[in-house]
Image 1 (cartoon, rainbow, N blue to C red):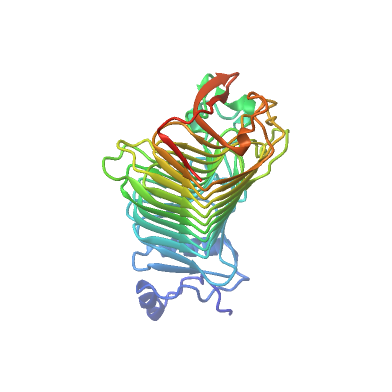
Image 2 (cartoon, rainbow, N blue to C red; image 1 turned 120 degrees about the horizontal axis):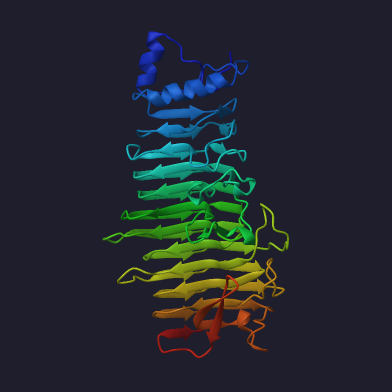
Length: 422
């Protein structure tokens, strides 16, 4: 019998005592056994409060329903064969692994979590103080397909999320690989029985989503995120502080590589963040509208510092290269934007046939400082004549709506609240 992960729980006293002390649980599994026994073994370990460490390797664990983690647990993969895979269709509201408020201090390390397009969410974390997710792979999560006519109310439409964290603090997500996360939404599907699905967040597909009213540190670094798709609303990394009374979320989003995203590479609705040394590329060119259309990028980095008072976000030393794009960096509120390199290549037409309005760097309001940014590209805003704003700044833009398309008129005159330092 091989020494591979997740053996059948032997009813031997010595093994039982060993397990209760949280020892190595990667033993005694024979790969000739039916894989469903491995799911049963994993659920038995989660039910045993004496087991704090669960080591995974060998034959994949095919799960048929969500795993609920209601206490601190450390999942760790051994070698390159640690896989938890969705075996059957999950409820659209369910995550493959859900950590409750009693699971503070839990960790996931070196584990593959594969939705196989049968699950909407990979990992959901709610109300914890301390979560560490590292060196893992999250792949193939698909939002609700409401085109089939089986969905009768917009509240039953759920976006795809690889990692979803709500009202939690002390969050560390680093060195993970995330790909193929998104949904079927297309331009004609924004409104559902008169409800704006984008405004309701029902098409908000995310690679990493961190939202809440908690006050605590957030670190999202050294992750690789690819193909977060969804035509109207999708972001590779999304962080939002909501209704918090203290400092709210603060921290670092750094050294991530993000390639092919539908709407935003990084979307930040918070203050006290450093967003630096990230590399963002989006080269989606398809005019077709299907479930994997990447679509036109709204902003590679969008930062709205909306708290009162707003504490400065720092956006620095990022490298951005876009095609079919609106903006490289869009900052609203108090910011320092410096040392970034932005390149935009655009044919001026979005996948919905609308003219684009390209600005490499845009600030809407507030005291912002710009220094040492390098702007490249030949894309021009077709509504500003020969002026090439893809090679410059758009200051104090005014939003307009035309046939459900938001666009911006630009005032090229620098107000006193904006400082350009070269």
